[in-house]
Length: 588
Ligand code: ARG
Image (cartoon, rainbow, N blue to C red; front, side, top):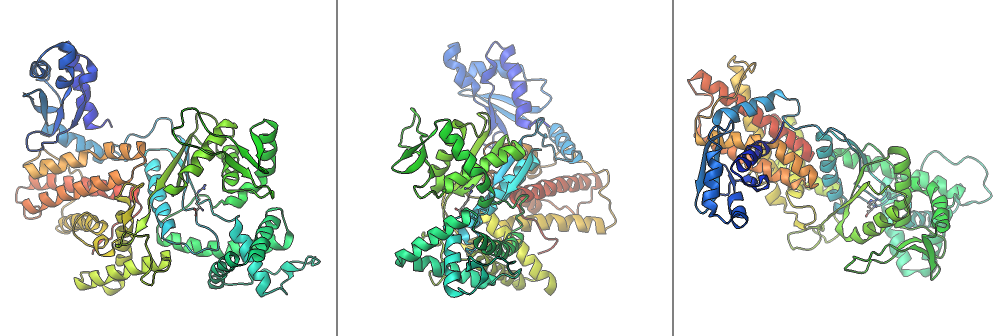
């Protein structure tokens, strides 16, 4: 379905043209004075200069041509030259009914779906998941769902960090602790054990220990770097250790993401790119793109129009080791071979912006990725604590994702238990659901690139612009609908009719905006737009609810129309929170 704003703009274009003015003046916006009108057009003001006419005269000419509008009940030219509009009640009701009858709630499915890869999550194997990875997972999951709602073909790829120096560190530390293991005996020819030589908690202790030790001891660091090199070049024993590390760690990572309602289609990692690297580097050299600079192999990526210095993209260090950019370029070769994506969206900390600029430019310059493919980096800001510094535990350590979620769930549980309307066993799963909404909404309601303050008290509040408030609103609608049904009334054939009052019309107008909001959220890769919208929608509903007797309404026709409106409001809300990556419970 076309957006309402597009429909009005089309009528206005005709009206401008008929009156002898350019169609392009017919830009329609939501009213910034909702007390006066619902939509407005300021084109007459913009045209005054060109047509050497007072804006009010232009506006009046245009308004004169809108008298038989199918969409507008009131159009008015207002000084100095605004065109103020109110929608026709019947038109709005029909629009909502069409939305309700459409399986995508009026969201037009893209005619030519794109193949889109979303690279998000990006946890590093064997390192504990920390809050930095939370944002990548939450925002990426939402972006993926938004793309899907538009009708695109989407693959979410976790892109595990499983190939770097941390692997060499763990191998080196393990060798120090258990030198007798067969992995470290170069003469060993037999099969390696199936069982990993460590548990997940041991693994999580090994990495930070090794990392700290390496910082103090140069020869240990050298050894770890060499182990990384050997691993990357196929050392048999190290590869076996590596397999254990990945297996143990990935099982734990999966558990964490499941809890976050984050699902990946592809569990590929940096290591999967390894096999493309040697040929890629050869090709870069052959084509003259890569050259040696102080022993390192680099590709120039600066462009004439740059306003700041963009250093060359590093492909290989002088010791032959590949780098972060090397794996990202090789991963692009793999993605091109396997999926020919039209668009790839990367989620990572905004401090990685330079890295992605270099990689994207190198990929286009060398022809790894066709010119028309869109490579987009969605950099996010830092999640800070109340003190404005990067979020830490109370003891000042790095906050683990698991602990953070446990803390939120506990807080939610306390709140639910306080005004308990649900059974004990339900309370736990309900508090997890609301907790997830609190965390995700708290994150997504900010523009991704901005830093934000993670405030447990605020995020878990049932009032204000929070996830729990949104869920509370949905649950309230569900409860009214249930009661309606319990009285023996049916939902079948219910239609929204003309609005009976202001708050009802305002709710109807909000609900109609759904397709426009989703399209904008996709076009701008901006989940926060959905949050802003459902907050407005929730407020519009709550105002209507407080001003209207719904279940006690005696006029049955009126009541049916209310119920139909509630059903659509609920569907819109649910589709939006689905796009954000959480769901609403039945009760709370
Ligand atoms: N593992 C990286 C990190 O922890 C994020 C990976 C982002 N994706 C990518 N293709 N480079 O920062």
